[in-house]
Amino acid sequence: MNHTAPLGHAVPSVKPALHVLMAGPRGFCAGVDRAIKIVEEAIRKFGAPVYVRHEIVHNKFVVDSLKAQGAVFVEELDEVPEDAPVVFSAHGVPKAVPAEAKRRQMIYLDATCPLVSKVHREAEHQSAAGRHILLIGHAGHPEVVGTLGQLPPGSFTLVETEEDAERITVPEGPLSYTTQTTLSVEDTAGIVAALRRRFPQLTEPHKDSICYATTNRQGAVRAIAERAEMVVVVGAPNSSNSVRLREVAERAGCPIALMVQRGAELDPSLADGMAMIGITAGASAPELLVQEVLDRLRERFTLTLEEVVVAEENITFKLPALLNR
Ligand code: 0CJ
Ligand code: F3S
Image (cartoon, rainbow, N blue to C red; front, side, top):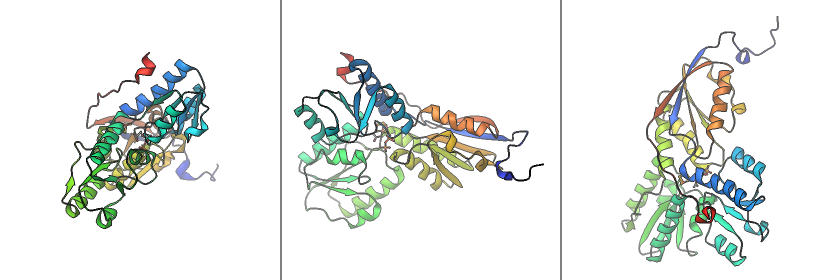
C-alpha cells in the first residue's frame, strides 16, 4: 500500500456531493461582447494582422484566442504600422490617441464600452461648464487614464479611497465628480458621502457611472457568498471588476474567496468537507472558463448546480458603423 500520497489530494472512490451556487449574472457584459466582436469583425473585414492597443479586455484566454485569429497586441499607438488597422480596448483611451490615429490617417476602430464613452462625455461636459472634476478610481488603470485624458491638465483630482476624500484639497469654485465604471458599489458610496460632507458645492452627475454589469455582478456574488463556504471568482488579477467580486464575497463573510484564471489553477481539495460553494466570473471572463472550473471540481466531487439569479440583463451594443459597411 502506498502511504506517501498526501491524504488531502487523494481522490475518494465515491465522489462526495458538492452543491454549487452559480452567480447570475456572471461573466461577459455587453461592452466586452462588443469589444471582442469588433476585433473579430475587423480581422474578417481587413484581414490579419489587426493591431489592438492594450488587452482588448483583461483576460489572457480572450487575448490568446484573438492572437490565434490574427490580432497583434501592443501598448501604444506608435507600435502600430501606419497601414495596419488598430482597435482601441474596451477600457477607453485619452483623446490624444484617436487624434494621433487621425493625424497619421490610420484606420481605427474604437472598442471603448459605450458606457465608458458616456462617462467621458459627462466629465467633459462638467469640465466645460467650469467645474473641477473629482474622478473616483484607481490610479494607473487604463480606464482612469482614458477618462482623465478627456480633460484639460490641472482640471481634475483623482480620489482613490475614503481617506483621499477626507484629505484632498481642491481649487475654490464649482466641483463635480464621476467614477470608474467597475468600482465597488459600497466603497464608492462611502467616498461620495465623504466628498458631499466636505464639499457642499459638489454637483451630482446625471447618472451613476458604475455600470449595470458591475452592480449586478456584485449583487449576485453577495447573494451566493452569504450561503457558500467558499467562492471562486474566475477572472484576471488586472481585471478591476473581477478583483472587486472577490472582495465583495470576502466582505459578505464567506470564509474563503479566491480568484482563478483557469480551471487548472483551482485546487479542488480546498472544498473537502464543504457542502456548498459558489462560482462567479468577472465581466471579461468567458463562460468556457467557468465550465473549466466546474470540470476541475468534478474530478473530485459529484456536483449539483443551482443558478442564483439576482438580475436579468438584456443589454446589447451596436458595432461601429465602419464594420457594417
Ligand atoms: O473598463 C471596462 C470598460 C471594463 C471592461 C471589462 O472588464 P476588464 O476586466 O477588461 O476591465 P476592468 O479592469 O476595467 O474591470
Ligand atoms: Fe462596459 Fe461595464 Fe462591461 S462599463 S465593458 S458594461 S463592465
